[in-house]
Image 1: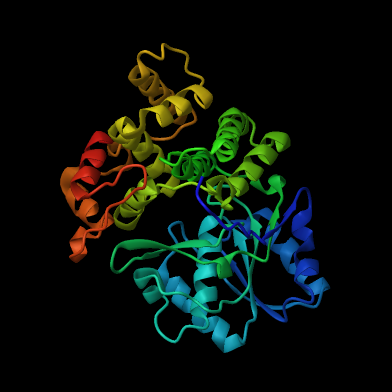
Image 2 (image 1 turned 30 degrees about the vertical axis):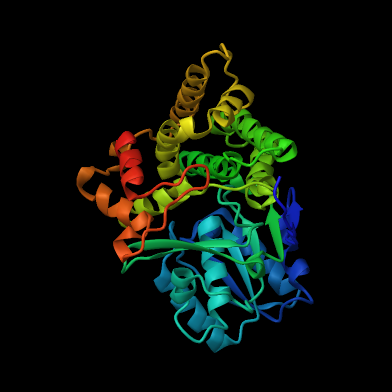
Amino acid sequence: MENFDFYAPAEIVFGKDTQKKAGELLKGRAKKVLLHYGSGSIKKSGLYDEVVASLKQNGIDFVELGGVKPNPRLSLVHDGIALCKKEKVDFILAVGGGSAIDSAKAIAMGFYYDGDVWDIYEQGKAIEKALPVATVLTIPAAGSESSGDTVVTNEEKQLKYGYGSPRLRPVFSIVNPELFFTLPKNQIVNGVADMMSHVFERYFTNTTHTDLTDGLCETVLRTIIKNAPLVCRNPKDYDAWCEIGFAGTVAHNGLVGMGREQDWACHGMEHELSAIYDVAHGAGLAVLTPAWMRYVYKTNVNMFVQFAVNIMGVNGSYRDPGAIVLEGIDRLGKFFREIGLPSTLGELGIDESKLEVMARKATKDAFGSENPLGGLKKLYWKDVLEIYRLAK
């Protein structure tokens, strides 16, 4: 096990009717808030009215900015920064899923930066200060409600970059599983793939003596696999949503990755799909993850046997570990398909034409200095291209 520091100060306020506490939780922490949200579904559901009522009851002044889209756009982040400066906002409340939260974090760190906030994403600049952020979660998927991470798409450059800082962890996040009842099927299953990938990116490692975090990863994944079909069949299954909602938070708050080298190749490869084709992040991950597994598993067969046995429930002869691994990968792909996720790039509308472009961009080879992806196995642009081809 490797040395690590773990500090995850985000307060999670979990359970029924907790969205009505937003104003109470902000009282004493904020004078003027930016209320940041997406396309307007929170107004149709009544959530917007509940949050606004809570803010008013507690004397919290606010301005609002809607319009966040999946794969949140840099242009709206620029608008948010300008609005916050003009209105002298001192706190941001994001109401929505990972896109709204990531957009809020981008605005928060751009508020104190003199240049273009995209510089921070592109150059990995350290930030010294950011506006505090809180969230009311409406889609369990990205885990952004408890992480210090944010991902934004520069639509002009067709680039999607992530950034992380402890200063971006939300002060508090409200997680009421009842708010998930009205989610459309595609958002449910895309969220499932996203949170599972957050665990996989940490689970597959060459680091040894990680029994505790191995077990945590495996339990989170088995919990998701058990409960995802339940919420797909009955979107109002509160107990199953509790399991999924809590799993999404634990999957990305950092805990399950402590003490181990992490991978993150699948996320790096998928960001190119989202940047160019604007596909749903979870859908892209569902296509790429099994392909990545088939390409890299021989690098650490034992790790993949553990995955197949402990997570996917494969039984077989340990004299043929490759067969066990491939059965585990097949079962994962079958699970994704059964809940309604795509299994090929073709299903996402992606053909051969830009695979090499995406592979070179994912590894930065396109920008003159190749930086391979992954921790378990280093992937150069030709490796990434082969994985894209395996996923066709």
